[in-house]
Length: 326
Image 1: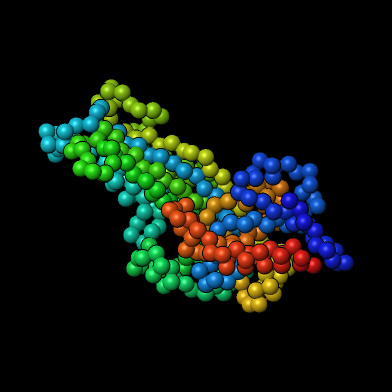
Image 2: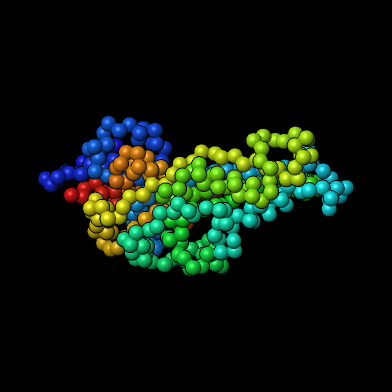
């Protein structure tokens, strides 16, 4: 959807999009008439200030499965003797991060694009809300205490989403040594990191820790030939994208939002979440910006996901300011 401001000055043309518009966005016929593109996504900063972001992480998912015996074994009859893939997978996952939250996969940070002076300045101007976040979400200290959250948004992540072995933990469970154990990971990507390359680094880490890699469940012969066997599969993925804070249109958008709010806003070089910014910034070469509207404690991707009505109204004010700016 394109909207033009009703003003006698040179009008700007904005495009708006949702995260599901990657395919339509690849049609380039109208890109030359678009001054900028606005994406609405993610939560406002916990300070409550209007939040403008200039980039979004990419993402890819992976599943690691470690194989043990050919079938589940009785834990009394064969415990302390048969290898347990659930324990082997737990050790493998633990090897991927140190106690300060730094990913230990070789090369994981090699392609990270350093923040510019203007991007660091924007982060320094953001109120520190770490105590509020920890109190709201119920934990005592962050994974890494050296850097603030907004800085760490500009680094890639390795996160465990789910873990399964032996049929789960509901009820009394089953007293078995499971035949396999699986974990689902998400890897958030930042500017200049390619999904395929990051996946290859993950696979190399698994191999480095002594696992023979397969592309399907191993048969008895393979299990008998290798002490530890694993399968690593990738699901989807796209790179990150980012717009320079120093563009004239960036300053104009930030001023419009600040004027409408009657005070300072938050400028984030990159938000923590993922969105297909790269389609617009790298493929279509359109300056792309993001507006975060929902409350920071909205339970995103969880039960009772919500939005405060006040945030909706203030979001409308922000969009109005953008669509009527000179």
